Amino acid sequence: MEEYFEASLFSKPFLSAVIVAAGSSARMGGEDKIFLPISGVPVIARSLLAYENCDDVSEIVVVTREASIEKIKALAEEYAIKKLSAVVAGGATRAESVRNGVGAVSSEAAFAAIHDGARPLITPDDISRCAHDAFRCGGAVLAVPVTDTIKYGKKNGFVEYTPAREKLFAAQTPQIFDLEVYKSAMERAFRELSDWTDDSRIFENDARKVFLTPGKKYNIKITSPEDILIAEALLKGREEK
Image (cartoon, rainbow, N blue to C red; front, side, top):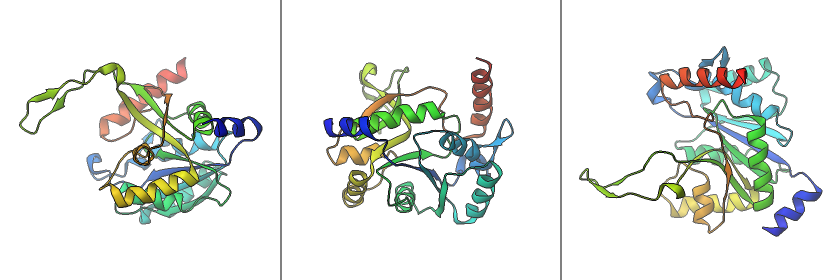
């Protein structure tokens, strides 16, 4: 950990943002959620703007469906996203999509920030806080404490046990990692894990420590139609403060 801390004092690492937006949007009634508007601005455009306006981010790579590549490029031009360096097609799983995105980053990249394109309320400050922790520790994820009581259930429908709530956190994105270490951990995960939906999981599988950067509850993921209404309300409340 000390080597990361010392390096971050003298230079800002080249940070590539990999925005993953290649999902099926199965719960959105056939509409591609990343193009749905939130207060007039498409979901993916809001995610792009946050990374564009974050001083710690050097470039942006978007992973999307093959059919959406040109539409993403057009949106990037419309919203003046100057840091966009590549738009690539996703894979059959999220893990494969992330690998495609990581494979498209600049050779200068030292760290990669993996972000769900469907988290449009992320802010440049959120990204920077997570980035600085990653520069210091090698890996960091935005996360918020769980406030509900969680039950671990059996397949028969009964509760098996109740984990201690004070030790539980809900992971968000970005999740930011030393790129060289992450690539090695990712290839190991493809050999050892059946699948994963959380990028820090592969860092943990490689016996690496991941720092929990305090996140914000407004950093929600759009998964269903009502989430659009919730996001608009959260955005309005944030703008009125």
